[in-house]
Structures are given as structure tokens and as C-alpha cells.
Length: 128
Image (tube, rainbow, N blue to C red; front, side):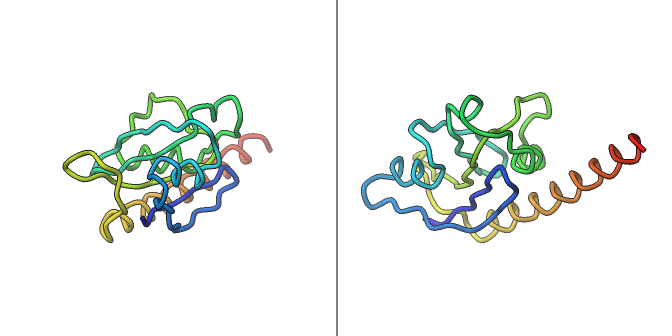
């Protein structure tokens, strides 16, 4: 399956999820965790996260802002650790992102990166 992985250090890349054993196992391997959870976004896009990420990982500001751009509530708690973006079919089974979904997620990351850069510049200006 084709998805997009975003790490807490700001790296965003297309990845192939190995679902040979199981989709769940492949998802856990991409995220690097034991227990996963899913955050449903608009456009049938899912953000898969480490269910223990809040305790085991760093806050992922880039993925958090991208998820808001993709329909997540601004009031929701931040995402932590590595986040994996995939989709699902009519039966609810996890699938590869479509080309349009892939573009939408990458566009959201571009906007999120720009917004965070502006916020950092604003914060720096306030502290001068």
C-alpha cells in the first residue's frame, strides 16, 4: 500500500506499507510502535498514530497542522510521533492513498510547513 509518513522531526515522505502479514503489522512497522490508533479526516483520509505516542514520542506539529488542514478539529489534541496517512474503502478496509488523496495530503503538508514557518518568525519577532 502507498501512503505518506511524517516524522516528528519534520520529514515527510511517500512510503510503501508492507501488508504481506497484515495491514495492522505493516502500519505498526511504518510508525514504529506497538499499538496504533486512527484519526479520521475529510476525504476518506486516515492518520494512523502511535496510541502511546503522547507518552513515548515528540509532538508532531507539522502532522498536526496538516491534519487540521485535512479536516481535523483545531480543538483536538496534537499528534505525537510518526504519523502515517492512508485511506479506506467502502468496507472500511485500509488502502493506498489515491493519486488525488496523495496530492491533497502533500498540499496540506506544504501549507502546514508555511504556516509553522510564519508562526516561528512571528514568535521570534515578538521576542526581539
